[in-house]
Amino acid sequence: ETGVTQTPRHLVMGMTNKKSLKCEQHLGHNAMYWYKQSAKKPLELMFVYSLEERVENNSVPSRFSPECPNSSHLFLHLHTLQPEDSALYLCASSQDSGGRMNTEAFFGQGTRLTVV
Amino acid sequence: AQTVTQSQPEMSVQEAETVTLSCTYDTSENNYYLFWYKQPPSRQMILVIRQEAYKQQNATENRFSVNFQKAAKSFSLKISDSQLGDTAMYFCAFMKPSNTGNQFYFGTGTSLTVIP
Image (spheres, rainbow over the protein chains, first blue to last red):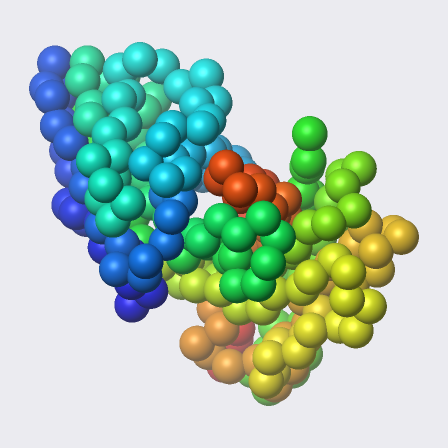
């Protein structure tokens, strides 16, 4: 247990469905991330929130919509996904400190998403 | 942009033996951190070891140690006395610290199997 909790663990959805992934961190961190993990590829950074402001969006399709209502919670809203969006979605948090200590990322267990 | 390369997609080692996983990275930054993460079948990414680029001494955590060659941009992980529980995917990661969202870059991973 790393202090980052993701729900649900597994999700199967049709291409016309709308669903949301949830991430919660209990570590007091000020930055949260969404990553997509596909087989044989590096982890793909999707979104970064620092102090609840989105600071990076790596050209992610608009069918993925993040929301960060506070520093402890992060959501990923999904709608009209494609089968190629099937992957493991990982949430992470870290403490942004401008290079000071203890800045590794802490990960949740991920949501295994299957789009049918 | 930063890139992280893990050239060994799969490796195996006999229990109690030593194995070394390779990682190289490319960056023009001078201040950065390097990490090795472990992802067992449970999918939770767990930090194994951390290295600050400004430290010349190689990091060590029990049976895990790194060989950090800054000039060569190499960061290999050595696992001594391998145990069955070490079977997992191992990801090398580069982190550029920032006050607006630490930027993490990951390799494609090495799948390690410890053979009884």
